[in-house]
Length: 195
Image (tube, rainbow, N blue to C red; front, side, top):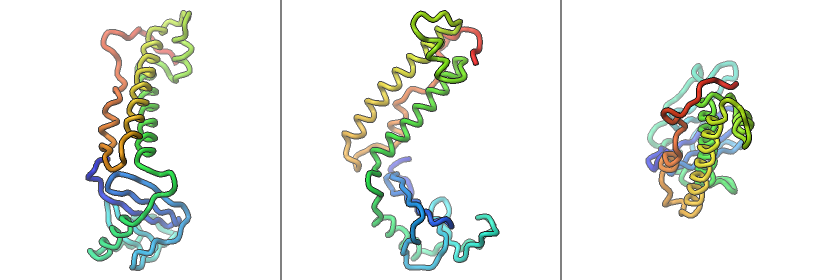
């Protein structure tokens, strides 16, 4: 996500509305009335494609529906709706970035465990505990060190995000790139695989 992110609006056949603002803020509303855009539709996709479906046929999938491209006036009305749209209470770019970073960091933690031969983080904790005689205890301690370091960096980044006005935030990738990627340190792996 970056500052050049395109607006998006999707209203699906299940009456769910998804909106993305140009700053990357994404939010949705479940089981809502069709947005008043000033033209007829049952389903609308304004994202990587810009189409509307006038009559949704439940017996067909999305690709088999009659899709009508949005014209310039309709696109302008959609853009205006997005511009005027307000996110639900508590939804903001600060929380969104921090949630995305948290999921990214968790994924990196799971990946580093796999890289060093562990099937999950519980085994890492058991093998890496003080006094352990586990044959891969060195690997486990490297994993735990990585987790400790990335958590410290993660909390520093989230502090920075929350201390920054929303309109001055960098794009998400700027913050994500500050988290070290999970890789094996050269020459530090012990042989073996502990599942």
